[in-house]
Amino acid sequence: MSEVIADERTKESEGPGHAPVLTGCPWHDVNEMLQSVGLRPTRQRMALGWLLFGKGGRHLTAEMLYEEATHAKVPVSLATVYNTLNQLTEAGLLRQVSVDGTKTYFDTNTSAHHHFYMEGNHELVDIPDPNLVLQKMPEVPEGYEISRIDMVVRLRKRR
Amino acid sequence: MSEVIADERTKESEGPGHAPVLTGCPWHDVNEMLQSVGLRPTRQRMALGWLLFGKGGRHLTAEMLYEEATHAKVPVSLATVYNTLNQLTEAGLLRQVSVDGTKTYFDTNTSAHHHFYMEGNHELVDIPDPNLVLQKMPEVPEGYEISRIDMVVRLRKRR
DNA sequence: TTACGTGCAAATAATTTGCAGTCCC
DNA sequence: GGGACTGCAAATTATTTGCACGTAA
Image (cartoon, rainbow over all chains, first blue to last red; front, side, top):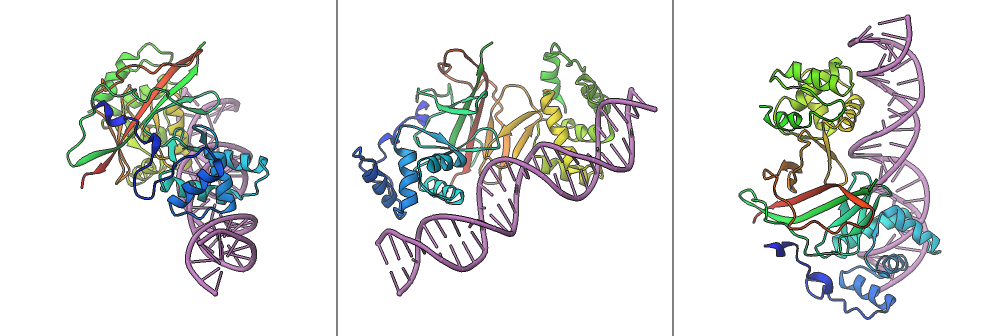
């Protein structure tokens, strides 16, 4: 039962439209990734994809990614950043995380896992242990099924 | 009735400013409740408090409460609803729940528990079992402590 | 070419804030 | 009476959308 939150998609080489075989080459990988979900590998999408997936698991807001792109001398409009993030999310390459009602975070790790939220600096961090699961599943109401479980462990500095 | 409220409030009769002894009389209770956290029992706060705590555990957005108040022939401005909800939250009488980034829900049940979120109609429901907890606590980073754990189990209609 | 993609600015949506008038203690 | 409270409208913040122009296939 605990496997509900199991970690499988690390190598998401299945699913309709998903088939990128990672090579380690950022350009090639992002290109494949976009192609595989039917998005044209345009200049801005390539750049954003590179920023997003170039390093390990990231948690970014649209604004943050926009700034990064700008600093990286990649001219993109904020609207395009939003559009791209939404498209990638819809395509299953990103996962949206709601934590404080205001900002919306996008997580490059789409496998099942939970988060720490640092209340101080509003930073989001993956909880390393993917097996951190429930003692028992809640009793789901008739006619419904679990679509996803989102858990956020809020942390504050110890005094 | 107000068991839910009675339950926790009775227990946290130690915190500063918290000490209302519920009697079952909504007017009296809300009055006490407000007094106890240092808020003047004005017409609109009394009315909103009555709507909020009159029945058991509720999950409302500012907009929803505003409509309820309007329908109940209680003239309140949306701004005041927001202000009041925030004041009550700050006072510990309400708990904020972020679930989809857009709307913010306020839960009249401030005790530790989790939620079901119906993806279809965007309804929030308490998970009855308060013992639905983690198999093991996540390893908290040095210097930090858990402030709260928010878990949302998203449900969709089974097809 | 030609549909898809992009930038910009205007449009929404949710929530907050400034301030003049009102009400509670 | 005086400060706390309220309502309204204007201000913010986060995000979406319409549309003319650019660009990948």
